[in-house]
Amino acid sequence: MKQLSRIPAAALLAGLIATANLLAPAAPALAAEDEQRIYDIEVVIFANRDVPRGNNVWERQMLVPDLHDAVGLDGGPASRADFIALGDEGLRLLAEAEMLRRSSRYDLLLHRAWRQPGLPRESRIAVEMHAGQPIEAWVKVPSAADAALPMADAEVAAGNLPAVADQPPEAADAGNQPVLLASDSPPAYNAGQFGGGANYARSSTAELNGSIAIGLGRYLHAHTDLVYTEPAPPQRAPQSATDTLFAQQLPAWQSHRVRDHRRMRSRELHYLDHPKLGVLILITPYEAESAAGD
Image 1 (cartoon, one colour):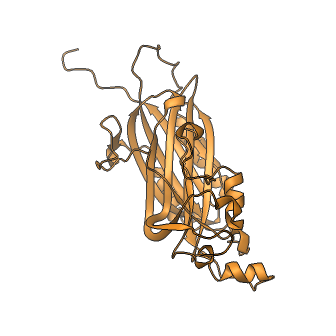
Image 2: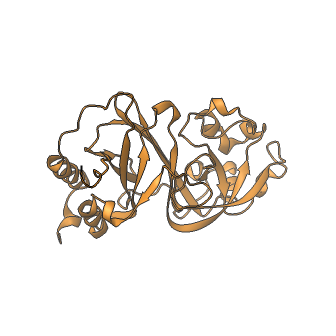
């Protein structure tokens, strides 16, 4: 265990997954259509310390996910009775989490599990994922002028930021949440430049913020939509007048968005890779204990 930090990252993760899958029983065939399928979902999310932070002014942005359609597991207003948080007794990846916790290469951000019904993929429901210190943010309310803002161009083109505020609900992919550009204070350059009139609302985020949605088809499908926000690196010297303009308004944080879709089998440990963020997901069919006397 003391030599963990010297193990190459790829070898460490390959070992974690191979060991867990070797010990797991084979996944059974899918249940009949009229049977209610319940699954235990367990996730381990960690950040990679070894990836250098870029200081390109155009890559510097702060993002806050909009989770108004996601389900919470804390018993609050966004919770549902059929999505149940599991305690430590329901965790199967304790050894993997402990290895990551002790490693000098990674920061363990979140380890949690919950139980949910196996919903069809097209009607899957996202579950909120939050971890780390809270971060105050000012979120830019989308408007028709967004497409004219240089820092929003890439996000609009990628479908991450709506070009208009009243985007029809059917245009969004269920289980993937919209993400809004943000700052740690209301950016002044939008208050009269590049079309101006931008509206900002006070909000908050965390180091890890986003959602994971599990859907059921012929296979299980995991849809991850996570934002990892870390302190921004020192700014490089401005290379142009545009750099100088944006450098005056850059947030003190830098966000990395991780969107992925993976087809999965139950009882197998799956690894979702990203340069900054790693996600381990284990999906196990829940089998209720037989009633006494059966």
